[in-house]
Length: 193
Image (cartoon, rainbow, N blue to C red; front, top):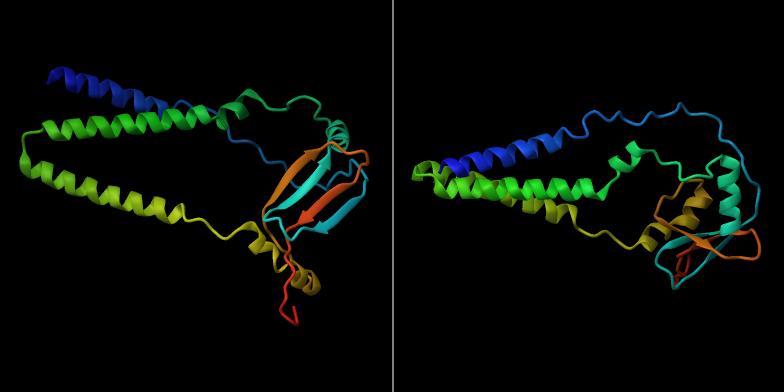
C-alpha cells in the first residue's frame, strides 16, 4: 500500500511539474496597429463555383515568394518559443498526464476502505464525467457547411455589409500572377433572389 501511495505521489508530482514547464515563456508581444504596408500590386479574379462547398483563395507560388521577399520573411521566422507554444507534443503530454491522474485516482478510490466516502466520491466523479461528456457533445456539434455562410454574400455586398466565412488558401503553379478567389455560391431558382 505504501508503494502505491509513493508511486501515486511521484506521478502527481510529475503531472504538477508539467503544468509549470511552460510558465516561464513570455506571451507574444502584439505590435501596435500601424498603417498596412503594401508589398505587391497584382490582379485578382473573383469567380463562383456552384459545385464547391468551400471558398478557395489560389495564390501563385511566384507571387507568394515575392510577398515573402518584400516582407522580409525569407527564413522560417519561427523562434524556439513559438515552436514550443504551438507544439502538438505538449498537447499529447497533457493528455497523457491527465489520463494517468484519472487512472491513479480510480485505483486509489477502489482501494480505499471507507464505503460511504467511496460512494460520495464516485457520485461526484460520475456527475463530473457526465458534465464533461455533455460539454464535449455540445462543443463537437458540427455547424453548417462553409457554403452556407457565403450564400448571403450578394445581398450583403449590395447593402454594404461584411460577410465572414472560411476560406482555403492554396498555393498553385500558374503562368500568370493573378490571384483567384473562387466562391461557393449556388445559383438559386427562386424568383426575386
